[in-house]
Image (cartoon, rainbow, N blue to C red; front, side, top):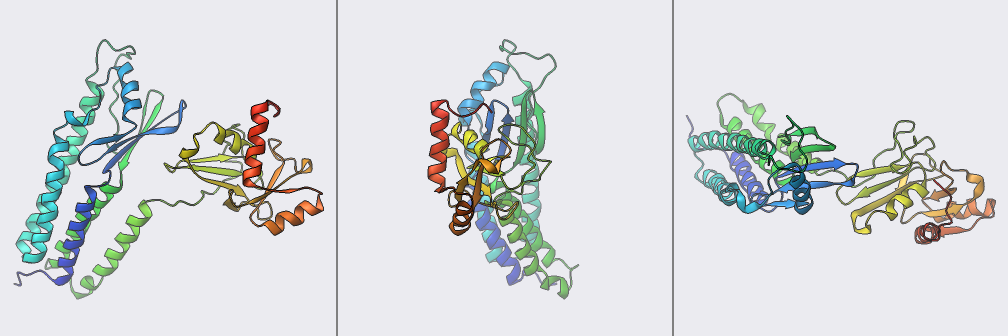
Length: 350
């Protein structure tokens, strides 16, 4: 029986080793916390060597319910994990260059064991963190524990916690998938036809990884289902709908352009990544608000009296403005105008 692995398997191992190396420099896991008092949400990032994110705020909240303060130095895992990942990356490369099947199968078993142990350790850390509470805490709820979910969502008091792999976690998982693909390729079960499908599988995995990073474009607004994040009214007229996306990828939807600008006024500008508005001449089609052109007219009668129509192109805005004897203005002018009305106290009660 042939004991050397194929060039395809070697390539898979090299790519997997590179993915592991990159995972050392990006967050591996993320826990998101949403609550009414934090509309932008809080985030806890777990890297191979440290904890990052909104640590100070989370520690301040945890103090009141008796949870321990989070410090990277308190976890021996953050000292050991970077070395373990680096060792596995090196082993992947050694196995690729040595080309021995036995090494490949042994590496697969060892890597799977490593992943299982890591997840068990993570669960144990979450359990201890959520159950070992200070009995003298300011807020005590009998029988209540605050263990975050290992993966998925969970309600913790008024916080909605969501735990999911971050970029490094997906890279780590992808490295394991590539390793398993190499082992399957080298086993005696698959035939020639199966071998030819491996490049296709690798390409599909690459596409999946890219898609997991998310899209920076607007999210569709569903009329009569989505509610305005400012006035809480149901979004019913797609011609005036708007959308705001933060730097963390959170999407906020509005039934009126005025609602979005009022909401944005209370949000630090550095936290907003994109503004979108509905093109008045193309119902439901969201376009970049910062490059759109606007016409204000009382006859528009938008849901919350913003009475502003947005147009993706200046020509369309100019034509509509000429028909209704209205002036065409840019996003900057519109934004400043609404902010000035808010500051002077002249805007109508919402």
